[in-house]
Picture 1 (cartoon, one colour):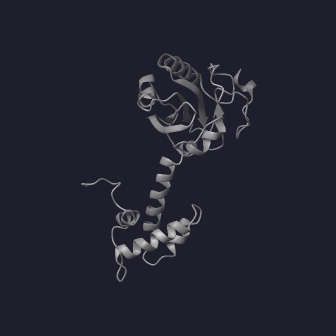
Picture 2 (cartoon, helix red, strand yellow):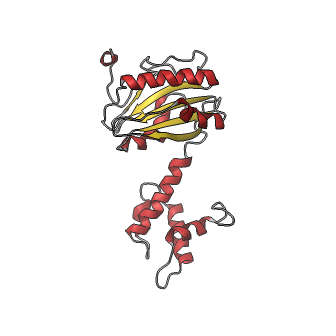
Picture 3 (cartoon, helix red, strand yellow):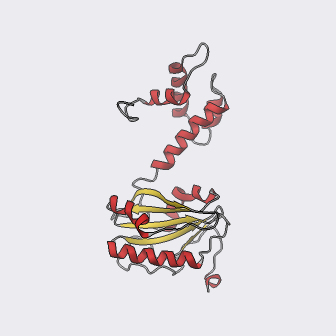
Length: 228
């Protein structure tokens, strides 16, 4: 508490997650075995390998794996360059599984590298309300050159509603006033995603050449005819 959470070593962080050891294996020794297993494991086999350790049951194994996965999600996007919509999907696809709409703002620097991914608001099962000040407060703090907006559709239909389009246009205008370009607005579901820019529903910034303006193949079929 005195020195902050960045103060403990990796071994001590594992000790904090475990809390206690078991009879015959003190927490420090058990934490070292866990740390060795984490180092030698991939994301796919971590749980199985942890469960092979004496003193690690399902509850502790899941706690450790969950902490690692959460840290990965929070930090693996930093500095990643986004040149097309599909580049962003690996960093936001987990929001598609949420039962409520989550509105996300991804801030980018001048090279279109991710600075931060923020949840701006959480709504009901089919609607979330956002205000420009909520979207751009973080972007201003990050000194972002551009943002990409994103939200999930729990219904599974990634086609934007009229409210989605209206909200997008309002945020594009607000961004232009602040000198922060809204490059795109992605709608994601568990089956695919929809790029409002790539479907011609966003007023693109002509000088933004790094973010590809060519169409891409989404994970679902979303023809332009369905938007007429």
